[in-house]
Length: 518
Figure (cartoon, rainbow, N blue to C red):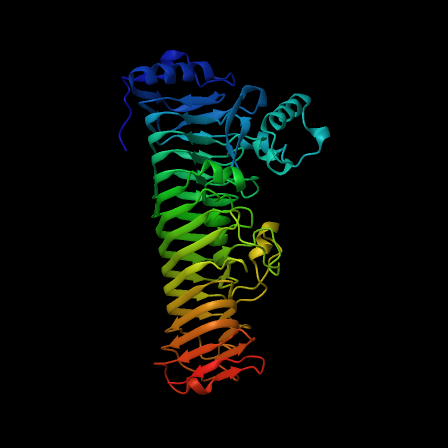
């Protein structure tokens, strides 16, 4: 991280004082505007500078020295109306606190703090109309009239994000702390070649919609060495919602996340549910997730459409998490819903791999659910350890979480075309280690469970083909290693296993499965 260019554009020379409650907005914006004309560094020295929303232009480095704080005002009248994207839809709302818009070669850096003053905005979230100022009600009515969208998304424009990179290229963010965002903390939308490194992102646990970093229809994005403690999802990847998202057709792609630490929140890395413009080529490595509701979560639903594909999650440690692995095609839908015709609104998730991952003190080993009309494809696990011994309790989760939360410790799988497990260790007391329903192809190679694992270890219901290799029967458990049922359960193959595993299989009378012994 480069030092400040004190010969550049020092905001004090433009009249910023940082010694009163009077906003320094005009002084800071003047320095930013002049810098954008010639290029250079806007220098923010130590001190607290109260300001309204700011816009950063081309060829500008905004440097916040150690001890410097940009404190954004709590005053909706200071935030003009802009058009942007919120929750996957292009719509009007409040100007972001700090905005990089249609700019190139921008850097936000230093050791200072950017504070969104979210407390002011959070009080209006879900507040009765009688507690919302008349002027704010008028602004919200203006947004709804301009947006002409469904009522269920208009509320997301009621608060500005703290920091937004919109339609920009070659932007880097480093060193700074971004905290107390009114809405999402950092939003990267319609942009490319964005680097976020060595950044601290913090929101209180009760901050509504307090996501950490949202990557939205952007490509070539790199997040590294960053600490996130957010009340909502830590890192989100999105690409538009439903028909509009498909029409815009801007994917989120070529994204890497590495060496990041996530503490608390709803999810470590979350993809969707706004993924209608596709999400692809995502790599997440060398991260830790602690005390989050979900670890890696992919969520979508009917009418989203879009494809999520080619994702790699490697070398991750998770602890005290409700469910470390979730792929859910039933977001805000009942899991037992009937099949529907496949159309442009039918989503697809495929080619997702999890390797070298440890998940301890979790509640549910995993949850994977495609749609009955379109099975998700190509899910693989290799060298993964899951210790699902934490007590099951969904009562403290966000209500939306209940749609991918099974009241069992088991790794649950439904409506998946093919899923494979190589050298996986699972501990799931009181339930099977793995439970498969309406799945076409299951491969289990080298599964390890405790000797006293509750039987059956593997449960199959309407699974087309199952191959089990490198496994051993449970010496201290009564009952079968593998239990199979359902008329669509057909081929079960056991080869290269240890001991008398072939004698530890129970096939129900309602199944016509052929059982291939070694």
